[in-house]
Length: 203
Image (tube, rainbow, N blue to C red):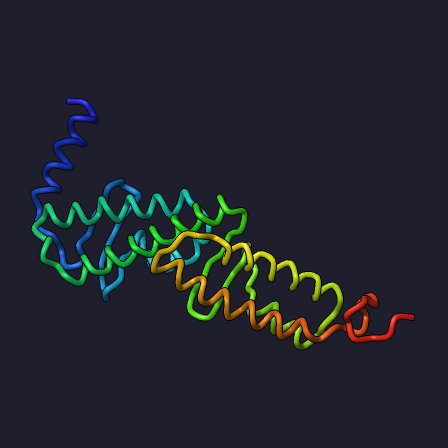
């Protein structure tokens, strides 16, 4: 019997075994999924942390999403359809990944990539809150122009016509930040070129 035949018999034998308490799933010899303490791990790496650290890596996000689907199907075939905690964690992770992938698609097609998490808001991987805070601490003309650029990108986000629960929340936070930026821009740095309307005398 060839190696392939032995492999098929091995997989069948494994599928007949009951689930262990960690719901172990090994789709490949060097890949192991487990569930413990209400967290899912792949090769001892917390999947939620992996998703958070993957940022805009579409390949990783899609791979993890597919892996979660296969993991859940494995658990269900073993009689684990009623494991509410496990199924809830899988669903939560899939929702997070789906939301991120949707955001990446929308952001790439709109020319502006953004991400909102609580009070933090990133535009093209730049934390808007941090930029505003730094400008208030040390305003310079270069920082002012940079802040104006971010303001324009927020305007592009707000100009989109689409609507969804997630996107409406993003729009609300974007509006708040736009107000903060406009307030910060009221202060003109000393090194800024003289312009009409700056409230300073033109020599």
